[in-house]
Image 1 (cartoon, helix red, strand yellow):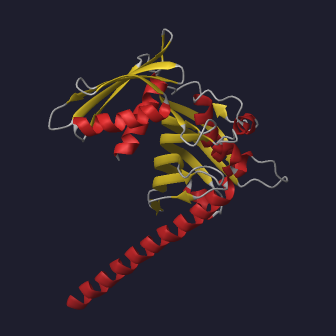
Image 2 (cartoon, helix red, strand yellow; image 1 turned 45 degrees about the horizontal axis):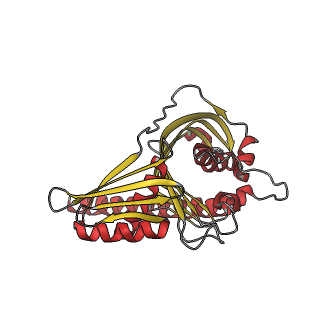
Image 3 (tube, one colour; image 1 turned 180 degrees about the vertical axis):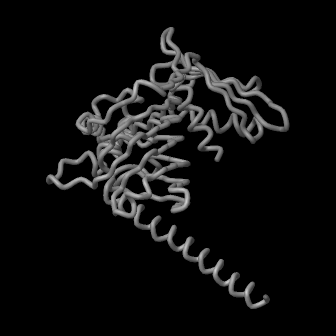
Amino acid sequence: MKKFFIVLGVVVFLLACIGIYKNLIMKSVVTRVAVRLIGTPVHMDKFSFSLLSSSIHISGLKIYNPSGFPQGILLSCPKINVIYDRAAFFKQKLHFVFVEVELNEVGLTKNKEGKLNVDSLALAQPAKPSKPMPMQIDLLTLGIGRIVYKDYTNGTEPAVRVQDVNIHKSYKNIISAEQLAVLIISEPVKAAGIRAAEIYGVAMLTGVTVLPVGIAATFLGKDSVRQTMDASLEHVYEISLEVVKRMGTITKQDATNGVIKANINGAMVALIIRNGSNHKTEISISARKYIFPKPDIAGGVLYQISEKLG
């Protein structure tokens, strides 16, 4: 009996090792394919492949800016869930019944030459005709959280805007890896309203069908954003003042009452900083251009302050 449990333990250990190495090998292969396809560094925290449940799970996927742009993340994807056709897999065919992609943040960056980062990816470059990597995706759902747009055309410090799009769309009948990659990268560009981007033109040729159902969009009509910071009021005020001075022109600063006002990108921006609970600090930022609310500008200011506070 003792020998039986020893053998069983060895078998379980070997199966666990096979599972771990299988995932590591497939993670390496998928990463290399993605780098070749997109033309920029790609990283994933975890890759899990299961034959029993016919599923693939990827977490912590990040696509970084291409060369010629400041260091930063182009796409941050906390999770990708896939259900694949196991029978097709054993026939060495890529058939995915369902793919779920969640993008929590997309970083669109325009460099000092006026080039957009997504337009410098391999996908958007004119190239010699090549055979696409075939696959079949029956249904894809794509979620996009927020878009951070950084414009370096006017100096070393970028103009930053943040747009909370919070959209979910569904697509069907995707037939190549190239088509999938272009779709995932071009949809945030369209959501940001950037119609002149080259990647958008490439996406127009993909022929992916957008399902009329399952689309939910939320656009905030308010002119303000708010966040609680784990820092003292004095420190938040100091960092906020530094950020706003760099982004625009200060029109009022009142440290006693925690108020900063400025003109940023033609919008009147107001920051109100107050003591919160549990020794934290609350900051509220509003932005208006003429009579129109500009939550994207307010969000850009808040994003820069949050980055500076770490």
